[in-house]
Length: 183
Image 1 (cartoon, rainbow, N blue to C red):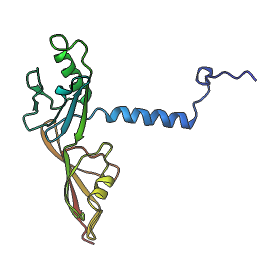
Image 2 (image 1 turned 45 degrees about the vertical axis):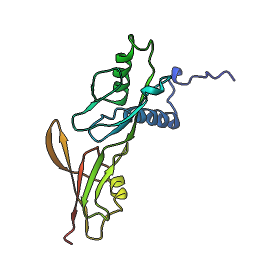
Image 3 (image 1 turned 90 degrees about the vertical axis):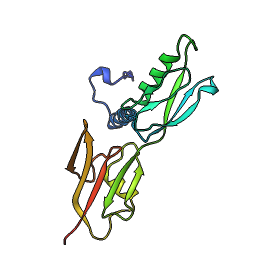
Image 4 (image 1 turned 30 degrees about the vertical axis):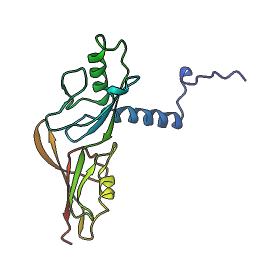
């Protein structure tokens, strides 16, 4: 039997498993686009240079101090963009080919209040949805509305509030309000 090894080149449809794995991989790539902000704690490692390894919490100014470089503005940068910025700054005068890794140690929180069992601030997690946020807060309280849920989010410097459902994505700094049911 001389079947071609690559069925895609023959115009055949890819298997559902192939499509699932492709979507899973693409979803992980999107998750790496997290924007750094005040309250995040990052670890910066320069391989082979132990004295340049540091762990820092980003404050409201959004500036991070790093040896041999001026203060770095990190607000809104992805961890990959910060890696590149530090590597570019170290390249030449101090190191020939710096290998920099930035990892997020602690994410800044989201907040949930109203009719949940444990209202408060919780560390953000990638791929967080409202149903997961409610679970983190101990679940809905007995008098919680099953659908009157709102999120307040700052978008382009403007505070906006909108209705959400269990599948809605939650972002760092979001404020979730679970209203009380009247029936």
